[in-house]
Length: 457
Image (cartoon, rainbow, N blue to C red; front, side, top):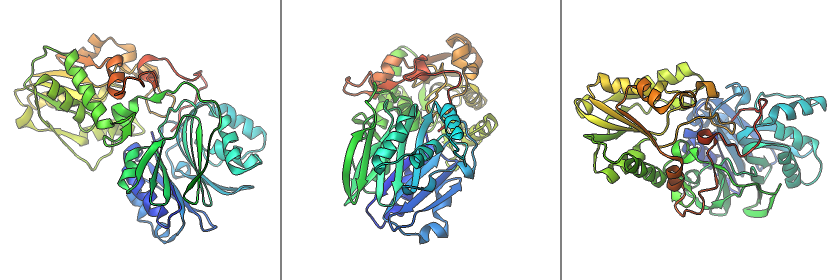
């Protein structure tokens, strides 16, 4: 997760980036930052917490520039602190340079040790910093220097790189993390999701390809090239299950439509199940429940009140905070659920603790029977590319049978969406079914994974 955005060739660069970051807030709630340049002097502003806290700073409002990049952070490994808030800015032989990164460099420990031996001094514990070290140590024209820095890194990354009036977007050779290109008036935009482009008034043009570097200057794409031969595309399928906004476009359809299809396929898998209502666990279960209702004919009901002033429970940095957030976030509407047999739709079961607590809340509110359905397959493997799935021993589906999980959750039935149906939901044309990373569901990773593999976002 984490979210990035960059805009150039406009006096409103910082404002547009701030608005784009608010659109991407769901991708990271721990810290936010913006780097602004284009007037001969780069400034970076970072803060812990939501984007709103950052944009209220007087210093940010007073600084002008024609290019900017921004970042919202969600931590998986390195410490959640202001020190690790991005973008990271340095001054080196190439001038003032700033980088914002979404992903996880799996060979970071090895690269860090190599750089330390060469005399590098690290100011952060996040893997993002290695790009700046390689940039500072390399000679040549700036796009080629950026390309060289990427060639050392394994794993997943989408990058926004800023130097004065030059904005660069880059994506790893597997295309694990999303990155899209858009335009507003005479300015280009790069962003993690299409929604961030459209909310600020821009138009989505295309995805940046796996392994591609796009160099933007003065409202023009100066050049586009591949820093390394692209590998087999393996874009994270969990983006459509949980991470991305419903109004973002992926593989030619909205994420909302993909989730509706997930629900419809679940209804097909659960044909014959009888219930009074189908209801979602807000918010990511909403459209899957809607799809289930349409396909099954079972009445859709919103049976929870959600407190929208709390963050997403999945992305809190500790289990205690996840549990507290889950308890505060949802409250059953007793008159809707009491005495009912229900189909409950959620996006996934990871540890199982949050699902169990939600199910207990519903039973305390008087629900008679619960048929629990998930719009993804069982999560059986840890993610090393930027999503905070825990180690395998803490993944309930990696260690328990579906029957045992059903007993632990205390539900009448438990159904996971099949991997084939998930891919069909996420690929409307049928031609992109083999371009997804589904390692968390299959254990088959698109890159080399070892005991030394690093996890960060």
